[in-house]
Length: 147
View 1: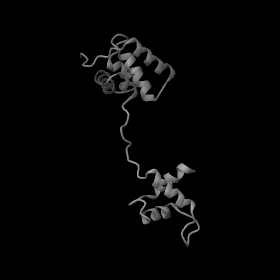
View 2: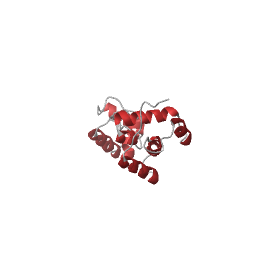
View 3: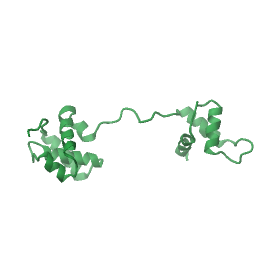
View 4: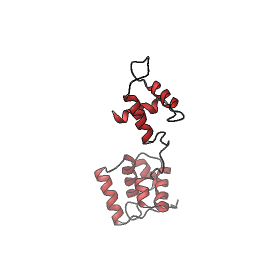
């Protein structure tokens, strides 16, 4: 079957891929993509997709996707992967709110308590109107950054 997306690497690209593989530079996915691109190069070894998949223990569809990405999106994005534009979950607290939580933690606990608990801090933050709602886990992560 004729390939729809043919990989043709320049000498500079080949050198860069060889460097990544030789030094194991970057993530394991980056190294694997570099190895796949080197073997799929029409001007080089020109291995079949099935042979590449067997050599690197991946699916043929993975090889096809990497070929397609190289042709449609370019060399750099294929090798390094697409960067996330936004984090998966937006931060709930800004710097000022974090500072208020830390300051509250450093102050004396409410009457009847020996020290602050995470749940007590979370309840007090909501009570004071610093945020509308917050979980004790978010308070823990905020305090952990300062420890």
